[in-house]
Image (cartoon, rainbow, N blue to C red; front, side):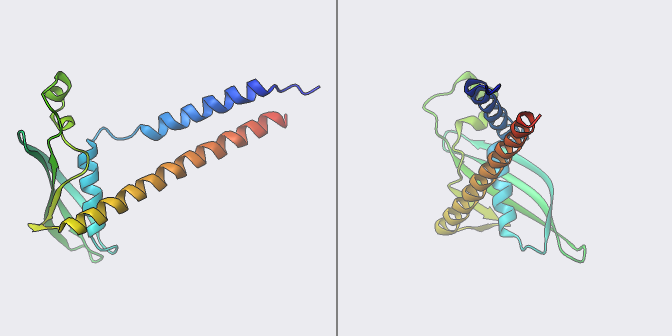
Length: 164
């Protein structure tokens, strides 16, 4: 008689999937708009360069939009530094202020920018759309990879438990 029951294995699998999803969603406490702006900015730099983030500032132009301004140094291969700035503009999306929006004002704004500048140069709508789409695909692939790794790890643990 098989000492492992199907419901037990399903419960273990469900627990594993839940843990993977929880850990996949946890991460830095930085606002998603700031992270997205950083990722878009990084995508604009040459692969031989790295970015040293100096700071960010959110400004609000209620009710129209908010701006996430980033300051950073681009470090080239030889260690040379160039100070730069970028800014992402997010549209206001709420009908009225809520307590949550007052506690975290960025929550009232879209999560995708409608405009972006890098060192004062405005990206075209087509360029911004292409970059945002590429970033969303990259993030989707990263989530799928994390879930696949979690599922493989759990399957290995289940197999190890069955083999004992």
